[in-house]
Amino acid sequence: MSRLKEKVAIITGGASGIGASVARLFAAEGAVVVAADINEDALSTVSQEENIHGVKLDVTSDENWQQVIRDVEKEHGKIDILINNAGVTSEKTISEVDYKDWELLSRINGFGTMLGMKHTGPAMEKNGSGSIVNLSSVTSMIGMGLNSYSASKGSVRAISKAAAAQFGRNGVRVNAVFPGVIETPMSKGLESSASALERINRMTPLGRLGKPEEVANVLLFLASDEASYVTGAEIAIDGGYSAM
Image (cartoon, rainbow, N blue to C red):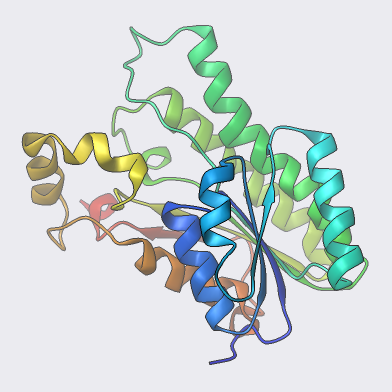
C-alpha cells in the first residue's frame, strides 16, 4: 500500500487515540510520520513502530512549532501533510464554565490548530503543494451541549475555511472533519455512563460509536493526492448523528 509514498506527515496528538490510529495508517501507506504529542510516555510507545518518529510538542507554543518545523525540514527536506488532531474536552455546562475553562479549551483546540497552520502552511507553500486536515467536532455543528468545547471546535471550523482560501492559491489544501463520539481515551468518561451511551447510540442512525480507524480512513483520503481538488470541505464522521 503506497497512497502516501514519499510523503512527510506531521500528526499532532499523534501518540494516542485518533492520532495514533492515523499515524499507523499513514505509515502503512508509505508516509514518513512525525507523531507530535505532549505525552512523552505515549510517544515512547508509538515511536517504536516502523516509520513513526515521536517528537514532543506543545501545540500552543510558537517556539515549539518553529523547532519542530526546522527539525522536520532538516531531516526530511519537506512537509507534505499536517493533521491538526491534538485537543482536550470538557462537559461543563454554560452555567459551570468560567474563564479558565474557556481559555484552556480555546488555547489548545483553537489556537493550537491555528499555530499548526501558521508554521506549516508556509513550508508547504514554498514547495507548491500540501494538505492540512483540521479535526473539528460534530458538536460545533449541532447543539450537543458541550459548550466551551463546542466553541473551541467552532473556531477550528471557521479558521479552516479562511486558511483554505489563503493557502489554496499556492497549492496547499485545507479541509476540516467533524468526528462524532469516537471510541478513544477522551471518550472513556462518557462510555462509563450506560445511559449516556445508550442515548447517543439511539440518536445515531448507524447505532454505535465510531472507531479511530474510521476517522483515519477519511483523513487518508484527504491527505492523499486522490483529494487533489478538495479544499475548504467539511466532512462529518459521525454515523449520521448530525443528520438527525
